[in-house]
Length: 343
Ligand SMILES: NC(=O)c1ccc[n+]([C@@H]2O[C@H](COP(=O)([O-])OP(=O)(O)OC[C@H]3O[C@@H](n4cnc5c(N)ncnc54)[C@H](OP(=O)(O)O)[C@@H]3O)[C@@H](O)[C@H]2O)c1
Image (cartoon, rainbow, N blue to C red; front, side, top):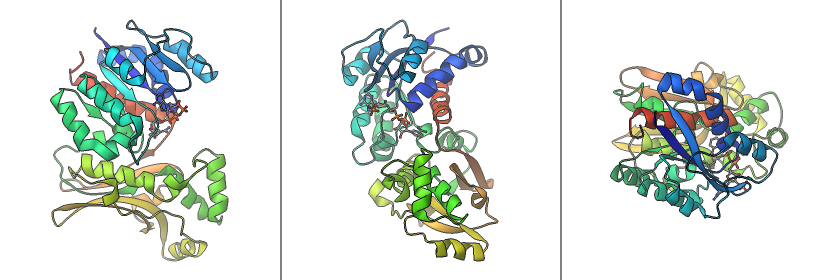
């Protein structure tokens, strides 16, 4: 059995999550999918850059990372671009930080890998939201894949749902809850707490960052709407084409008004075909309590796909988390494995 060689850029929450899953499921993956692997390269700002063509000791690396120590074995002094070019991996997992303005170094990482004939799997929204059509074209030319399941709703299957189980359906509309932090905040505000108080609790729980702008102003959801529009609906939208309003202006009176009308506020990301055009938007909406999205509370994500053959299909699941997002990386690695590009 040929082992899939994996390289990982960014050994934080998701990078460690996928390694934990790979270690834990090694025997099951071999038995069930004829899939075996070795992680040959890892790069992380905090832990250092390491490479071993015969496979790194990821158990030890996980222990070192958890103890906030630098890696101690197989250290190389290469920068990320050199590491990608020299590592001879089959799959690069791009798991560094998301930058929705410039794409950050992740765009260069992904392009370098694809041009080197390495498949890319990522949960980083930057390259997917800013340059999906270009990335996909480079992947096609080089006979590899650019897979991004984890960029929307973490491991809850959304993108793989549309080109897998929903293949053959025409999707005319996608609407849903794409940001767990704001959904948690709106759920708590219904219990009678004010915006500032709820934001503080969300920050204490680790849902919202110290600078919560990306979540509460809707920018994170807007990046995901752009990805869905371009990947699922075949549009070529830029993030700036998607009008965006967050939840910062929702008052106690608004919450009460929704209750009086048998409804509930949700921050809704939406992509729709209208007059032959694909239109995206992010805005808070009062959703009737009878709609499946209204029942989705807390930090959970959900999307309703309107299709020609099945009508509405709603999927509900986690939108973040170490194992949940690590799982998205595993499904895309297995997709590559199963498509026989690697083995
Ligand atoms: N966590 C989730 O639940 C989740 C869900 C969906 C999508 N995502 C996306 O998945 C990606 C990874 O998320 P995460 O939660 O694992 O982030 P994280 O915990 O912050 O880990 C990212 C790691 O990458 C390192 N890093 C950043 N830039 C680097 C570079 N150029 N070269 C090498 N290492 C670099 C960071 O170091 P420093 O700490 O020093 O910067 C950090 O150790 C992000 O793009 C995120 O938006 C995460």
